[in-house]
Image 1 (cartoon, helix red, strand yellow):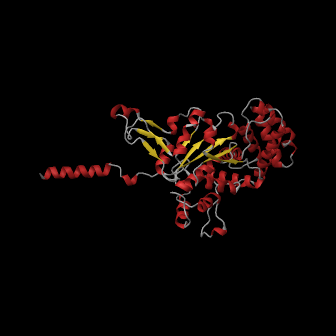
Image 2: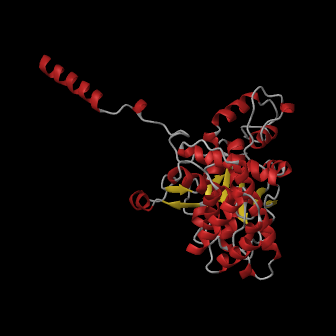
Image 3: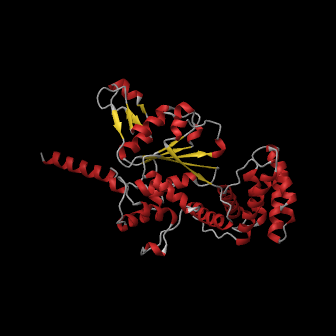
Length: 395
């Protein structure tokens, strides 16, 4: 008897030593993810704002509209907070206010604009601030189906057990309905019209019917559910939204940023954020940043002055593309130039980022380069112009 007891104890001890402890498993955090969602990245700020918020909140929102605005646009002295909340989205503040008001209503929000204008980033920030969850996302493509908007089935489980709520796979929008949170629909107009129209009943009646089930065949939206959709204004005519669907949304147009001051703030904020993922601390030389912003500003004017489509650069010339140029320049300089950013590398990076059509974009960019860039004076401008020329000759 005693021998058996000792054996059991030894086995238990062995299991205790070899079995991984649940506590020892690393939990996901913003430091263990390539890109943390906004609610994780700014968890500390959100927790603080929730504790400070004494205003009325619509539905099941975790923050009041005023606090949502502060989270997105940053705090001011008049907000009377004992800590600073950083600004995360740059642009017209009325756009953010209108978006918040829309989401507190019965209508969905459609953010529309050129690529790279910050539509998706604003949608993510709003969902994180309102629901504490921005990951109920559906990415619209030409291959998106109605099942992906509503629900699908676990085929193996259906074969084994039959159709039931357990074998049902809810879409991100259905999950948002059940949670009473924000659902996001990226690139809505990339979906075909019949798929888009699957949203109409969902947004009107606020429920999804599951006809395959006899019991529990209705999923109702809880208070707080709404949809934040984005659409690329360059996709107009690809899959136009029906009038019925348009009526379910408030449209907010997000313009391309043309203010040099705002562009500089966006580029510095986003670049430092991106480089932090690599463990870099980036100080962008002011002269190089000014060259980049001025070049993009001149490129927009050049594009607008060209009559034929083939004479224009295809790129939207957005702030996001400027960030891409800076990121490429920083990484190249860090890995291959001992961390020294220079105009030559940035000129090469800019050409690499903007040339997409051959030979149209090279031809248009080459004309612009000789007409505008090479006429600028200064060592950094000369280096930038040379880098761009060399890049174009290699394409």
